[in-house]
Length: 207
Image (cartoon, one colour):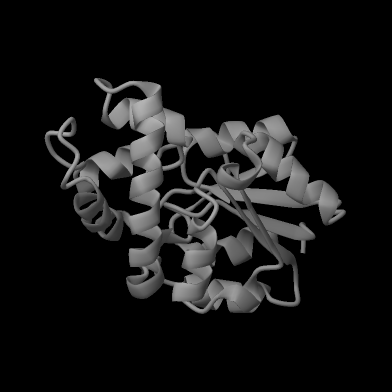
């Protein structure tokens, strides 16, 4: 195998949870007078991979950063409770891919999510045994590139690769000095890099 570690983005790479997130945010924002309506599924798809600050500024440009942080914290609490119980939609082949990688390469998640989001993903879909580590901006306060580097260093990986679906993922991998594979079935477009049209195609690229 070309790589000793496969690091995954979460949204748009391992699952699509935007429908569940839209429901949970509708619940969380129903009593917020300064939010005329909750974001749609399509709007949420457009902000996947952003930091909390970028996401709130894009969705609600009329509110202050302080108000955005307050509302984001509220939405995350409701969102995490909802996802823990109902999960999201795993992309077809993800479970088979993870089973094939188990014992063959170190696997981890690096995302710009809140601190409880990745654990909710793992618990809701019973995937804890397939990942050896995870990191996120919500826990470290660091940009994704720094978190990729952090996971690589603390697990002493010599030849890792990062798999993600957006240009932000590509830029983070580049900042970390890690090769990138584009999950083209996700939310974004990245040109000029190795790409997979479905999760199981990853096995052919990394063997």
